[in-house]
Amino acid sequence: MSDECVFCQIAAGEIPAQVLLEDEEAIVFHDLNPQAPTHLLVIPRRHVESTGTLETEDGELAGHLLLTAARAARQAGIHDSGYRVVANTGNEGGQTVPHLHLHVLGGRPMSWPPG
Ligand code: AMP
Ligand code: ZN
Image 1 (cartoon, protein in one colour):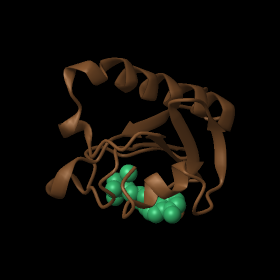
Image 2 (image 1 turned 90 degrees about the vertical axis):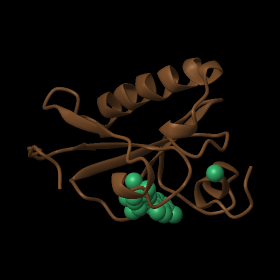
Image 3 (image 1 turned 45 degrees about the vertical axis):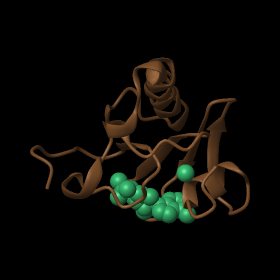
């Protein structure tokens, strides 16, 4: 855990979040500033900075996060209409919280390319 990290603090229960589901490895909660009718964040409990710092041995965790995103989308009722999974990575990727997270966005049509 990184003491400075807001998502580590959410994982530790030290700051509140609207949690949709959780298990031993991951937590899914609603984004504070939603960009779509459904906007969820999937995070690992363990502090990993970004997709760019995942190591080969983190492969199982990375897969679990993706499966958890799909499970969360089903639970939130956006599976059938479709949704987007995004991992902003680094500065130009638009990452503002340096704790790996998957955005799960749905409930409206998504445009492409992203801004
Ligand atoms: P990113 O810009 O890809 O790093 O995404 C970070 C996301 O975290 C943004 O969409 C923020 O709205 C969201 N966020 C930041 N702090 C919190 C919080 N305490 N609870 C829920 N979502 C948060
Ligand atoms: Zn963290």
